[in-house]
Image: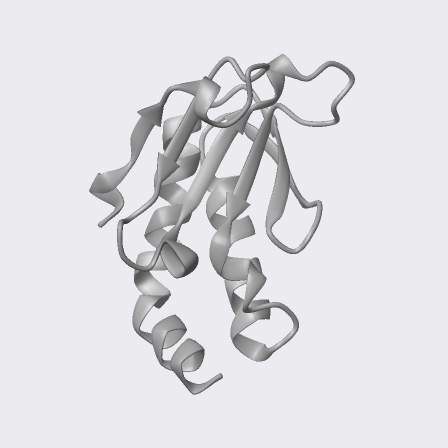
Length: 126
């Protein structure tokens, strides 16, 4: 499903954002949705990319939430050019480095796809 990554009109997210990527499936966007926005449009921000992962709203300090966070950070740091990935809030990361927004979005989408069955099962059990 990570093939569903697409560049979006930045105005859909924020008029200040010069580049944005998204994987937002019609079904299960709450579990499998990813947004990546360039930080270049926001002055004085401590990041080059802002990454938002929908599933982190539901999976935080539980075992699956901790695994999800670790795997997402590992995937982001593995993208060529990324120098840091800091979890800014439950659902967002500040990513620094000269890298591709598309590659970041695909890396996160791949993690979500790998965990999709477990995420669905735990979400349904909530």
